[in-house]
Image 1 (cartoon, rainbow, N blue to C red):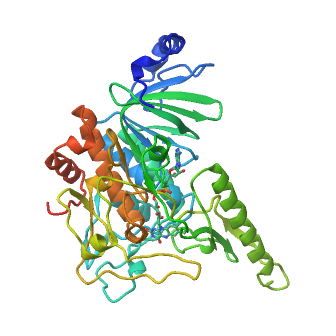
Image 2: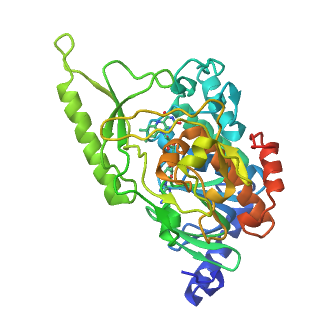
Image 3: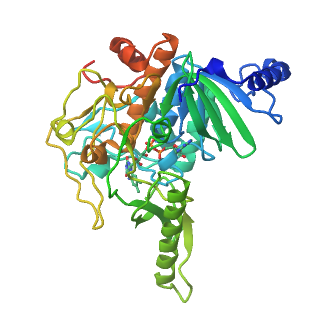
Length: 427
Ligand SMILES: Cc1cc2nc3c(=O)[nH]c(=O)nc-3n(C[C@H](O)[C@H](O)[C@H](O)COP(=O)(O)OP(=O)(O)OC[C@H]3O[C@@H](n4cnc5c(N)ncnc54)[C@H](O)[C@@H]3O)c2cc1C
């Protein structure tokens, strides 16, 4: 799959050129609106170009896109669903952590900005991060997922990110300048010419699609479906009820369908078994629209973060952010988090975001290159956000310098991250 972007067929080039001409007036009139269509959405394919294409607008992808755009890259975000936030909003896991370790903030930047603005907008409260004799989850931040999704979208648009909902990549081919990515959505076909890709799909879907190596276990952690039976749901003030969905697998639409069928059947069973109150049946007050996935594929990167590295708090030469959470492997019988030793704060190297032997593509989020145990901790939301910001800054710099992410000077990445209020290990 190494067709050059210049090698599109003659028919394609006529169609693209015609569409571009037809849309020129529209594009001019649409001034700085990032949602403006550069080509007419007629029968043909839409045609976009971007410095950075982020695939997946979830926990990591939203932050990656905002960071890339704020760093000056023309940025496009393709999300297969209808809103931003991924597992935090569509999955209903509105409990991001951990931004603090041992009484000190270790992750800040754009993720922290969004989370704290969500809490403030919703009149909520931040935990006491100084309290040390409490379980780790008490330092997670309770957020209203609806407010988070709205603010995430607003910040993307303000930064100039062009969002394409309901679309996903069908193919990605190398071109002279980077990539030519074909996306589809209901009634839409789109070709995006971009310099850099950041795969934030959770399971490294795009990396897998283009043949980059991924890691996966025979048995994966269960997913969960979140719901509430009983009193009205108070978003931002409480966590939802959750049922394990064993075998939940985000790999493709078939496995995702199965996870939703299994999860919803379990909720229905739970509802039917719920005791009646005052002679009235228990009510299902809230049900997330999708099962949330803990584990599927991890990308094989230039560096694989091992359990030993993670628990030792190894500070990598090319560290771009911190991560902090107990080892947290869910099994058929539940989970027993294993806290890190006092004072340990693991780091994430850029090379764990760079798929092995790749050029012009990074990943961020739970598909970070890591072994299974390390990943059970690295996958949490604050860490995914920090990785997203690091990937966004790096991709923007790579696009600007017309180079590949691992050739961007680390000092430039660190400087850009610090300019955007991220916390950089060792800096
Ligand atoms: C039940 C459960 C409980 C958890 N509890 C906590 C907790 O309490 N605290 C915490 O911090 N973390 C928790 N986690 C972990 C954390 O929520 C996730 O690991 C993290 O949110 C994953 O972020 P991500 O950006 O990698 O993926 P996601 O947030 O899942 O984002 C992936 C995005 O990519 C989109 N996408 C996927 N494929 C494509 C495609 N091909 N094309 C376009 N778009 C695509 C998806 O629609 C989604 O928006 C929990 C996870 C689960 C499942």
